[in-house]
Amino acid sequence: MANWLKKGASAEVKADADRKVRDIVEATLADIEQRGDEAVRELSIKFDQWEREDYRLSDAEIQACIDSLSSQDLKDIEFAQTQVRNFAQIQRESMRDVEVETLPGVVLGHRNIPLNSAGCYVPGGKYPLLASAHMSVITAKVAGVPRVITCAPPFRGKPAPAIVAAQALAGADAIYALGGIQAVGAMALGTESISPVDILVGPGNAFVAEAKRQLYGRVGIDLFAGPTETLVIADDSVDAELCATDILGQVEHGPDSPGILLTNSEQLARETMAEIERLLQVLPTADHARKAWENFGEVIVAESYEEMVAIADDIASEHVQVMTRDPDYFLNNMTNYGALFLGPRTNVAYGDKTIGTNHTLPTKKAARYTGGLWVGKFLKTCTYQKVLTDEASALVGEYCSRLCGLEGFAGHGEQANIRVRRYGHRDVPYAGTAEPSEATRADG
Image 1 (cartoon, one colour):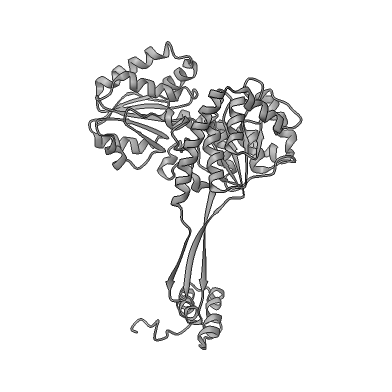
Image 2 (image 1 turned 90 degrees about the vertical axis):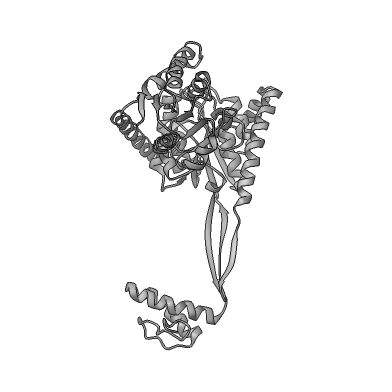
């Protein structure tokens, strides 16, 4: 039986916070839909103290941001983007169009068709998270999306140069200096100056995630990517400093970011809790990290690997860092996670920033039914069919006629019947069903 040495906020507290966010987002989106650019401008001034005539950055502004970075900055961005592009291309190549003759004269197939437009949100209110530009824009472009626009909030009163450079180098077709609900709403609903997109992607705070949830159906979304979550699974093959560092490295995202340690060693659990307190004294981002750890941090001691897997699958965390003697045990047995980071030599920050897998991942237990953002999110797998011979049309039509009769769909049945008459030269009563031929008779 597992023992919780530390528990996070209750489900009731989380639900109350979610309700407040939901009400604010609903009213804000309605305002954007009604008043368009005027509402977007007012919201930008209210929340980001940011006003300009046109929130789209000019080519000159974009180039100035790129020029303001050092050659080392640009090389580092290029390295990360190369890794993301390479892995996205591998994923794209794994998705094949299909065409096959399933019966004589019957051809079925599917095509993977890129969406026509995508809106990519890049968070940047607290920190200029340029990596989100790589993850969204590059992935969309590898998929073949012809129009990719991006929004990121201003940072310290102006567009964040590193974010803008990353957006541009990734291949964005238009870059807007907008953040929060107003950015997501403008991209999805459209305004006088921004044409609506087909899909919204990218992580964000609780308000951005809720806006995407409410807009789903009007547009597609990648997934519900809310405040960052991390789960560290460890045994006594690693030490408390490593566990504490990997937890704090993620909870610094914000005061609502859960960080959890799951271990089968009570000694490691207690040492990690003490190490977290020590590191919080020296971590420059401790203001955010401490609140997150105090309110949402958890420490769980399980009895076995099997119990650790069961608990981890129930948590369904966005990030799962596995540092055990046999990390592949969790790879082979876990089913609910956004991404796995296996062994002490890797960590979530590698995935967040440079290694090539996508960092936009499911939160709030969404890992039970979806994976993270990948090239396939920007593609529609659409089927088609061809019937090439009279014989094939009559054969399929016979079966279809009778099955429609079982359902009571006379109009559907006539779609089949007319083809049995024309191509099979059979007499089928109007709104009736085709009698079995020798080829389709049950005892034939």
